[in-house]
Length: 374
Image (tube, rainbow, N blue to C red):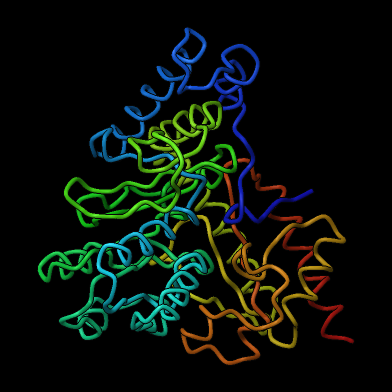
């Protein structure tokens, strides 16, 4: 298998798994329990929280453990709405479904929502966000980097605009967390998922800056400072902290490695396969993602044919798998319908090799040729 869908999920790092194992087999107590087995897990959570806070640059008290980026985004948006009870929300039109659908939910409850489209290069301009803000705007969300194109967004500038106007700014860092320093200074809250940087699935972080007000989404216990009820998954959180530390310490080298693989892949595809176009300039994207459209091909059919030949890719966000409609992100960028429907997201990781890249391109060429002949 050649796995080129690392933006959907990554392989668990061997060293991370080793860190997790004791908390699955030896220290399996409930961290809320008052006995020694519980205290061992509680101490592990304290250490994990401290470690994550260190590499984000925030305080441990601002770190909340959640199930992942989807819960983080839901909690931030709905939690702010619960505080204000009415008002206006501004989101980029390329937000992950966890934010877009949360906003749609709040619209049904009487909140106004404005979606700001990106420019043709896939980036949402700070000026367009500023123009969308109103006197009654209570929440703004722009992701740090798009999950389909990898295009990096100007969240520092947007965060400053929101701060100057007293508007809560959230940024979804799910795709960027393993590849770039998080924009903690520029946001009131941010979230990410461990499984995007070689950690375990089902766990993530919501950072809420001190002084920012968010109403809790999950009641039922005193876990996470009383903010999020539910028994904490100690093993997964220990693994997330280990994975995040490793990704931060190895970021420069891993980014260079992955970017090299992507450059080779994209160069070969664009030069050796006619009728291809790149969605989003590579110099404005994360090093791990390339979104390419293939004229005369349906992306879903191309995905299936590649899968039959052992190559795993995506037609867009993993959460949208199975959708027959073209990508909202690509259509918002102004792509033609045929271009959006013929797009494939290739995402690279540290476990990929040059040999895999060459074989993947060869198999891709054959698949495109076969589809275009039919």
